[in-house]
Picture 1 (tube, helix red, strand yellow):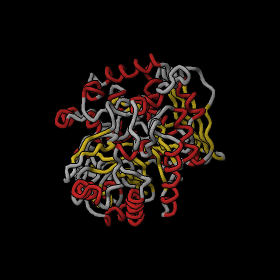
Picture 2 (picture 1 turned 90 degrees about the horizontal axis):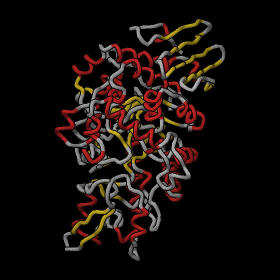
Picture 3 (picture 1 turned 60 degrees about the vertical axis):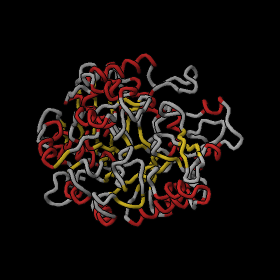
Picture 4 (picture 1 turned 180 degrees about the vertical axis):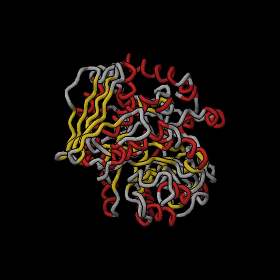
Length: 504
């Protein structure tokens, strides 16, 4: 993976068109975002993109939604930037041909073993304790009852929604299904995949069914299949921070999901101490994010839900509760209307809000947060809404009732052109160029000694260096450095600076 900033986006929500329109934004002499990103994570673009979960319930994972283009368009985009795609390993749509065949033919279907039933996991039945041991990301039990054509009633495992039917990844049918997806992506020159919901992929009676040793084994096996096809693997897990560290030792790449709430905590409580403690122990093989297509993770810095007394979080429980409330206040109550029981598609561990609104639309704080993100070891990713300093989309939330839609706006080309004239967006683009081009970011990282309310970091490579200092109490800050012996200082309140033109 290139050590450059990446973009995360839906194909149809940035530019209002398909893959060719997105490519026109990212590459070419007249592309407004040309040369800005080393890679792009295309959120699910498979048939179809408008199911029960915004494409994360694919009907056909090996087919591009025809409204967006085809595999040739994916391959053309991969000529300009590295392309990452999702492999939804845990489930597929209840509308998929495979599941419909199973409903039609029952145990005689060629796909009978592909879908995970209650009996397959609990052949001897389950006790109350067995069921309560299952880790749940959402309220309720992970089961849905279905009636087959012959009248049989089956209890299906559905971790997320009734339309997302879990598959048995250990079954030969499941392995063939996932192997076919990987090959299709490799043929289209996709160089990296994100394993969506992989933490729930393995089920074992009497256990949590989440990130068990068997899950790590499966991830290793899948990663080997991907590596054989020249594809890197990113694992997407929201979990207790120590567990994230353990996961990172076993995989290519993980997300730093603790970073967004810790940055918000630093601004809210005027202290850098929890953030500095995390920087001291966090995985280096991480993709840093402040925002994604999901909400702002809370579980990632909280106490271990399995043993809160013995495994405290990165911040105290009381401060975590206050932080959630601060986000609600900063967003003028919008995030409260989109989070938890207030909206469907529940995620108990996330607050649904744009990061810009979580910081009360404070341009300076927002740019400082991005600078912190870009300074941490790893590869930064910027979500398309965050790229344009997008605000909470209350109209979309009202139309769909889906909480995460508050941060899944549609930007047509005119919207993008207008957003690119905003000073906060212009400065963010310059920060991205600085992160991509300054040679020090390919060198060594240091967390410098500083007061409790201050974060100080340094990158250096030979005579080249770049430093960032942020005081969370006063918002005093400095981003400075040296390139080929020439000193510079990057200003957060100017339209341009010498640092923005630093070349490798």
